[in-house]
Image (cartoon, rainbow, N blue to C red; front, side, top):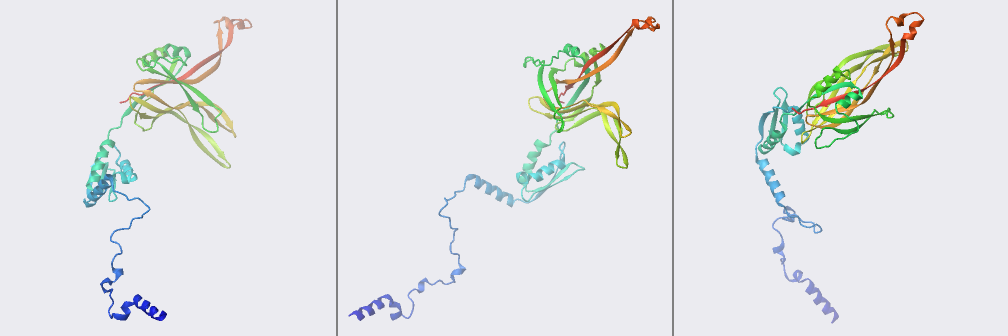
Amino acid sequence: MNSHSFILLIGLLTPTFAFSGEPIFDDLVPDEPVFNKPVFDKPVRNPFQPPITPTEDDADFSATERDEQEQEIEYQAITLKYADAGKVAEQLQKNLPALLTKWGKVEHDPLTNSLILEDKFDAITRIKNWLKEVDTPQQQVQLTAHIVTSSREALHELGIHWGMSADPQNRALGLNRLNLHQPAGHQHHKLILNAARIHANLLEMELSALEQENQLDIIASPRLTASHQQPASIKQGSDIPYVVQDKDKTTIQFKEAVLGMEVTPHILRQGKIRLALKISQNAPGFPISQGGNENLAIDKQEIMTQVTVRDGETLILGGIFQQKKGASLQKVPYLSDLPVLGSLFNQKGEQHSRRELVIFITPPID
């Protein structure tokens, strides 16, 4: 009984081997090898990541990219009127993905100040629109300066009182404090400058009148025209030679003793101008003996600062004082020349003069 049941069980498990010469699974065998067909018709998504639905921006971007791919490469030369073609081409190459496509190239011709573009039509159109904003005339500043040495009384006659600030609405006079630091290594020398702002009306006439009264001396009145963010300078003076001895070699070098002005204007909005200024008044000083040679020292008076003024407003910088001491002699004619008794008719004394270096700067926008 037990053996008969075992045979019946085997028969139930393997019926195809016992009674059929052909496999019953022929309809499941593929006509071609399985490795010739892809396992999946669509890419398999990671079940642990949420599905990503394309946005309208992605659709627009892909459509724009397809349109640019279908466009042909075009060549176009654009002549610039004001901007430098070399600098513009450099900016385009630095910001390549912003305006140029991956097919785009840009060159420049310095003789004609032209850009030579090679790109798709849409990209060239974008560059043209950008050039309309870049290729514009630069504003200029006509800087007028008066460098004077003045007494404190003369400044008071001009209405300048350091330390006072007037009503900001009438803008007749304002005051700022500027801290100018020397280079590293000379930080213990600090120069405090005064700055005031007045209007330029009749300024030159008042300065000339005070000069005739010997209350001030106009050292120089330089005028300079500078473009937006472009440095400009003017100077006058001489180069002082001095001997430099290094071991057995002796050379002659030169140092400038000049009166000069350097300025870089930045034209801001609302009629304001930021000026980066350097004004120097350097002159030969006393001779100094060094190593058997005699060289001249250079007396320096320099101002370096950044200030912001309004269009047509006059800025006044001051705070550098010049002190001079000298001997004075007053005598009675003829009587002072008498022997022995002549000293009774002479009066000797000392003179102290204190003058302030003041700079008036007016930067109207042209």
